[in-house]
Picture 1 (cartoon, rainbow, N blue to C red):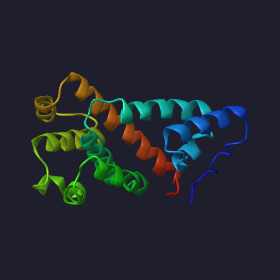
Picture 2: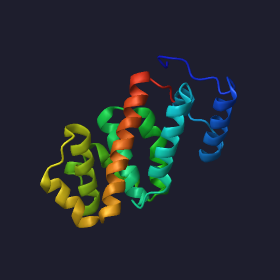
Picture 3: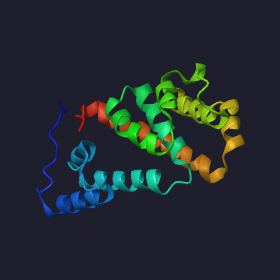
Length: 173
């Protein structure tokens, strides 16, 4: 059960307008995370803008984006985040074997060198904050400047998501 109440999307016109925008950008639904964010309309608006850019305007291929998101969910114990993104990962071409191997990717043969570089980068940013030169060099070998920027922003954004979800114990849909 969530630690605080979800917002009433009809509480005022600003919240109602933002709720309509969220529905339009999220397949006609307002996920629980956004229902919670609507408690603070300015934060909800900024969050929506950031996550829409990360998910829909990035040059990072979708399979890597979803690999990052699910890995962060595993590391941070954010089941809500994982459950939402596994179906998206499938649509982006990830196999069931790859999805199952994310938790123990270091010992898995399911990932190519680029995916392994993404996973190592995600782990370093999520667990240690600081990224070693070796880990960064592996990423740089596979991605250009824009994609590295998009990858870095994706790791940052989804750590934000999992921490918000878990701190407030947001309910699964």
